[in-house]
Image (cartoon, rainbow, N blue to C red; front, side, top):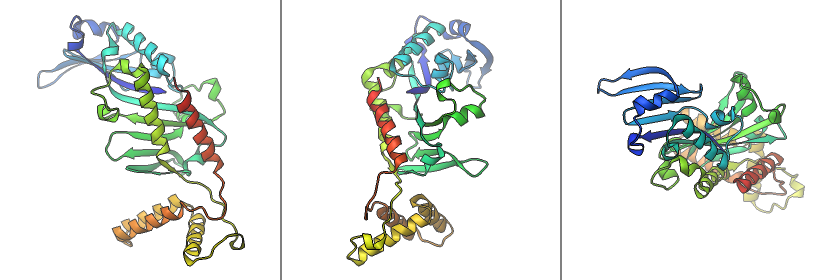
Length: 324
């Protein structure tokens, strides 16, 4: 379930190896750099994949997919044992104990083959607490992805069409995924990994430690579950409903209006625009959004779990349950 991994190995962790004279033998050097403060480092690439920079005191390996480097493509993702083998291969290639390297970025992802085109699922993924929900719009004004930016800048969750991304990058698509609707759910951790995972630091060897791996996947799953799901509600005729109070009448009328206006997300976006235009005060916009959200929690008459959310929930639960 891992994809991109950034690593940093300090000279203090490998006292027997001179980074500048030894390590540069094992990757393609592309440049040398001198800074005003006297620091000197050499940069390059490993198999046209990882970017590598080497100084006297540190080697950094970043900006590429560990999965692509190990498996030859970044469409698939690495399970726990795969990560171990990939780190071992990276260690052998660079003649360094990469298992000791500190991890500064972790991308956790999974591909889901869905029944419907992936765009169908975006409108059923609502807001998440302490996150900014940002739809990614393509040139045809269609949603092609969905990003959730955490307010504390400690991560990013995203949903997108993996097949389309591969085609745009002119990358091959594995046979299993050809002609399929492939929704990718990905979570990127780039800052404060120690706080995110409640450890002093994260090393490469921890990526294939059973308990740490479980912790990472659990957080990946918890983030998905924290997203409010938007269900299609079946509004029954008035005569079929047991409505006896003015409050119930108000609630059902508001819910019907929300549905007829494009749903919860469309209503909230309209309220946000009205606030930006100065037609609503901050408090009015807050109260309106709260009223919309409360109305959308109602179960009046009958309601069946939306098929698309049921499908995605089921696939997510299976992924979390069967990781290893």
